[in-house]
Image 1: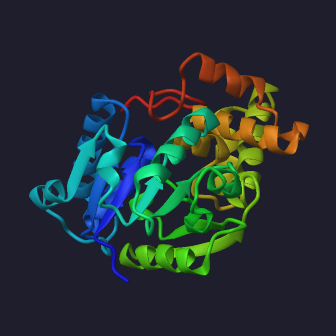
Image 2: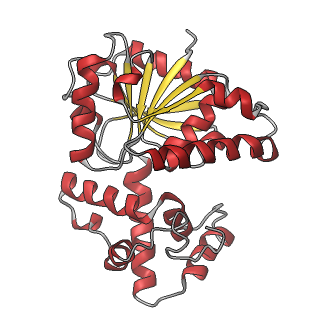
Amino acid sequence: MKFSTVGVIGAGTIGTGLITDLALHGLNVIAVDVSDAALERARSEVLKSIRFAPMFSKSLPRVSREDALARMIFTRELRDLTPCEFVIENVPEKWEIKRPIYELLDSFMPPAACFGVNTSCIPIARVAALTRRPAQVIGLHAMNPVHLMPTVEVIRGVQTSDDTIAKLLALFAQLGKQAIIVNDSPGFVSNRISHLFMNEAAAVLQDGVSTAEDIDKIFKQCFGHKMGPLETADLIGLDTVANSLDVLFDEFRDPKFRVCPLLRQLVAEGHLGRKTGRGFHTYPEA
């Protein structure tokens, strides 16, 4: 099957990346967020990413500003999503934010519409239980920058149907992406491991064992990682990392997921990484 219109809820970093990816590949996008300011930021970032995309990847289509704008609708109204065949939600990892969105979506979206839960750690079954269409709820964990990443972690919920998986794979095929399908569990594969990695790197920094620069340099130069753990946390957003660790701690009740005090302090001070210009590192260009 071919998709024509996809909804994106949440126009933060990952949501904006998804809008970019969809628009680049010729799909219509209806993007929803709670504020006009967030939507305007997303619109600006999407247009900038589309302009520079061919410089970073020769495989990405070239799309004019006019064509991109014609494919995108930015709105604060969830009900504007009714024409969408697939809706991907990307709001913060807070249950009190996610829960009412799915309860409302389920009440007015067409029966055939599928919901993609773009989450870092929240179990898909927990979200699916909010709806009358649990077979049509599937998890995905897209990485940043979305339009440059060729692979997505996909999470099959306990009740996710084969048809829903096939539809998501068809959508990814239109975006030139592949999927690695895993089973449902808090944090899935990537974040259950990577968030421990980032949290422990923060603890090493807090203990004065090394500088942030050298911690990251060890993993880049000794292990061949493209980014170090603290750089990765800054890219994701320290608030998002801390929220995800809180979810993992609440789900597993294992102290290994307890947020490092230094990470918690940086979030409290508003130093969230690249998006604010300072996290474990400083980013003058922000």
